[in-house]
Image (cartoon, rainbow, N blue to C red; front, side, top):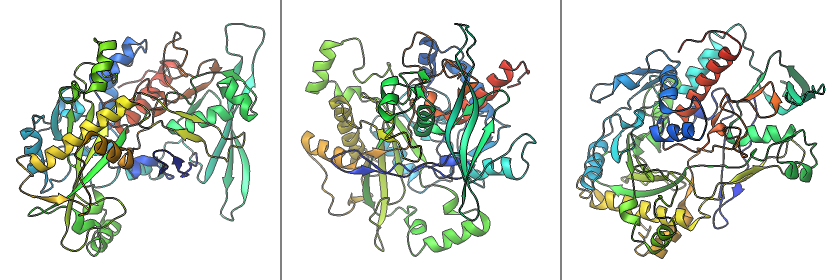
Length: 522
């Protein structure tokens, strides 16, 4: 029930990167690319090893499956042992695209083997496969909206056109030194009615408040409630209730870089997405919720460990001398540095002309060397937060991205499946870099967000000074308050965040039932 902002923040080379949010039921899951990748076993096992009891791969896999109803699709090798059958989120493999087979052939030709259904099994391998999508006849957002609109639970009330301002913490101290001094009791919000008038409202919790506002908005609300780094709260004039240094820190994201190419002899989705063909597709979506607008032009995804390409670069060699036993970028052995996903259409501000057929290759960099922050501009909850992602502030990240971009280009123009079909870069005046310095400038100018912000209310054990919530998702030193969204990730996963968000929701619900002594069944 939180209204989000769409104000851009200055990011790279004086460019701005827009950070839109989904302001409707279902949130950003209703306007994303529908890809559902869970991340790797090693991601979750590293959380467990860091002290987050109950968050290893074997712990979370049942909740991934619980959220999903997978519908098999002919022609794809799905591993049904890893898919769910009774969840609210209906998933399937995407409709086959004409470009898929040539792309897979090119990835294989460049040393990346085919791995069927690799994106749900948590395997840390180089591979190319087809990703499950949150699409089966309708969108994920509609499924979530159906849940609350068509047959809502009796104990659910949805407040529309409502903006949460802060969580009110009551001082419950009674001289005890072990119990939290503050208890979260009430949510303060405002509602805009049909006439445009704004009314102040409060919602009082009988047991506890669950904060699920995302990686930007959850820390924003905690800070406005007096929970966060005391120096920052004092700086903006907010009374410090609980000094938690990790609130708004450790911001991670996956960066995205796209390279576009004009192709011949292979149909892409441009004929459906851009005029004049788009009109028919939009009409079909409105009338039937089917057709090209009911899907998205991505099917093939690949993981690649870039160690073999980066190991001899001077910057990498120097860092390796200082720390010979580690992957300098912070990845565990075998974890990929980059994900590639081809996009069977032109994207961006420039549209293809009649007769042009476009395919893009997006390179998404996993991990980040320098995390960012979410902080406040003022004590006014209507002022949007300051979001600093620190994109490419690390030379190591930039060096990795250069190799990711260069290798992606080689896959497209040299790979055996696509090289005979590539006319050249698109737009036609795009110049392909040749030197390291040219590739660096290309990356700096083109990189943007892939909309996977996380970790600003990170989970951790008592020994972790940056931890905002414990492994039960309870906010430290505050009774009656949990956070249950992507902001609790200790580290960003090697995958996308949609499936992870659903898993966290299922697991949080299970823990709440356990803590209230209600038997939960997975």
